[in-house]
Length: 165
Length: 290
Ligand code: HEM
Image 1: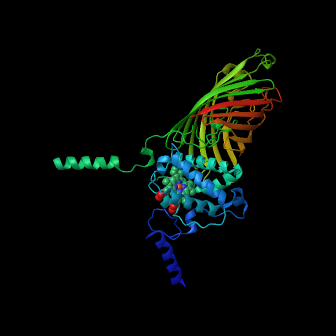
Image 2: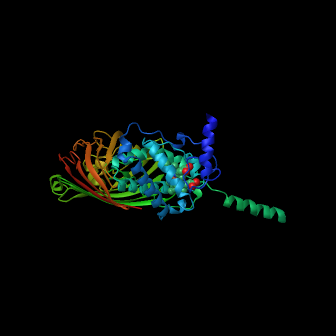
Image 3: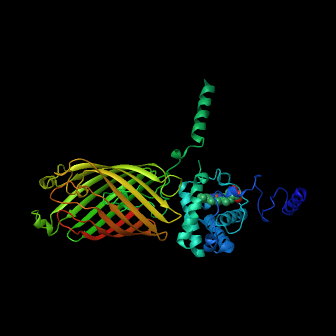
């Protein structure tokens, strides 16, 4: 049985080139191997469906993440940090992370926050800037301010892992 | 010799080029989230209107230096009050502030025998250090301690009404937290003070001439990125026999008009001030922060 599963995985992986994890989307660059685990998302999911609804389900979350990643990359303050990073993967993994935390029915397959942001040189002002970009994306999607803050309360403790030591 | 010299040069280059801790990075000013620098309290410290919070003046983070300036008007039933001040924040850690306060007795001045429009004034120099935690991030709430040196400019008059001194120092400790999951900010301050009505009526009196412990608090609800509403409380000593002093309350709305400009409007109840009861009215403030 497990042999069959690994065979399937190998099959899927070979579709996207050697070394690509099975959950990657076409066009993603490969990353150093790591073990996928929901705990890498850095926060436990909300209970119930309220938050997923407030974010308009997976469709709403996808719109918010796409807007956030594009706006961050174009931002005069933090854009530089995103330059030369794989936006196709970033949109997928951040979508998965948000969707997982908002309890909208996803697993998170990306790296943990410390590994993802190692050596990016992120300072506190960059973190606050990203929060503002995300707030704007959530407001554009029509997410109520109180729900926005509830979600941010899950991300806030991750700052310690994201900042440059 | 030649070898040691180049070895030394190499070692020095290594020290200069090695990754440095944050303190050695170039200064980077600005970067706080909107409203999280607070407004300027009556005595000039960053916080609410009536009380300091454990936040540091200016928009800087731990990587920079920040600055704020404010003007405040309070119009209550019989008196009016203005203050203006500046504050500097160093690395979101240390705050140094200055405020000049002016308290006009209007018609009451005549009744008090001081003359119409008699005005008291006071200068306050404050220092505050955030010793631990953070208002928004991390596990610990922001915790700060501070001191305010106050010097009343009407020494003869305040002594005549029973105050023991025209200068004094307040000591305080504050704990503040923005609970994002509820969009609620709570802040509490404990203050040791001898000041009568902030010090505008001097320090100490016939009833009591020592520091007493007072409690101050703010609660705010953030309605949007730019707007917060809330209420505040400040307990007061009661040192002067001839002029009872009441606890203070306010209800406020603070609005970030622009990134660098916050406007605050409050309804405030100062109770009995300089023998006249029922001093309720409006508090208005504009604060610029960078
Ligand atoms: C708590 C706040 C943050 C969260 C939850 C978060 C989340 C994530 C996630 C899920 C990934 C993808 C990991 C993967 O694909 O394996 C990622 C990567 C990345 N993040 Fe963040 N992030 C945060 C803060 C920031 C900030 C403040 C910046 C910069 C201003 C930033 C810039 C990046 C960049 C450039 C990558 C791509 C790294 C790479 O390509 O190797 N992140 N982040």
